[in-house]
Image 1 (cartoon, rainbow, N blue to C red):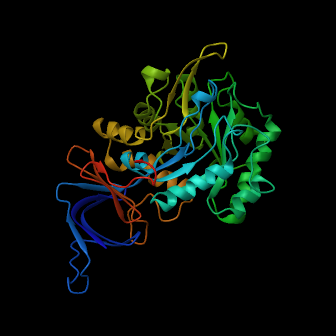
Image 2: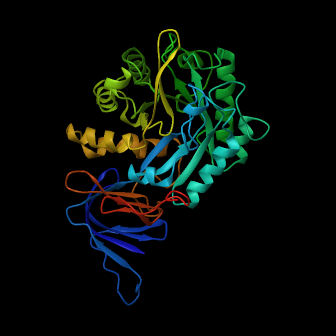
Image 3: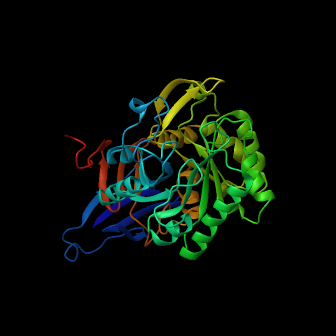
Length: 388
């Protein structure tokens, strides 16, 4: 058991100065003060967090846990991710997926990696499917994957408007979105179709076509990489003002990628009166960051960094955005949209997934499932073979 004393708590909503009692992997109590009798709790660890701020652990809904890429050949396949990278970026919950390559990488690999990271202290889920249609599956169809496999919450990332996609037709998109929705209804999960948007000329149109030609609700479709370029982002703003949801990629950098910087994108969306609860943010961590010329020739290749999530959060705070609003796309919003129980919020009975910030909003500590995994600015929990 751990007792955190004298901390300023954002749940992500401002709770003021509180004490937080953790028991195993759950939050047992939040009050001011909490002073349990020492004789009754001899193993209780008391930590004074005066002048520190406690926020929920970050949720990253788009992570290439087993690596991604390969657009430049076999040597450009990005490596699997280790647990320390998540904790270094303040991430305590991650949703894994496949990307362009669903041949040399597979759903069994992804599911196994998610279970390994879970055993090491991270809360994990995955998306079934990949870039192309027909989609990759583990059971007889994607609907069954969602219903029967505990860690699968939806389908993604399915690529549209991208020269690497399988160029799905509107009837195919509606069918796969329906599979996701019904799978979610029958299993109590979110049942979202998570759509990758590229730089293609169609932009957001394939997503809009789904809603124009079907009865799929907005909450069952989540397009990502909407800040890839200014034109696409402007389309996403219009979509959001109609009630749609979208995901900003925190790893997109204006200088390197020609996109809209994630902190600027989020603030612009708020200023445009997009519902602030309809915006999420993810890192694309572990995925490749290829740059192509107008003919589709690969120019360069990088790797998306998990730490972009926390860097973006800190950037938002440096622009004087209120802590409550800055936290929403990394915590409460993804937990609510993805129907992740007891996550994304600091509340009694929820997972003990907590980030601790110092006076400069730097990451002083991370507690994941009730265990200290980063402390005094240093990671202290590593993957089994990480240090060999």
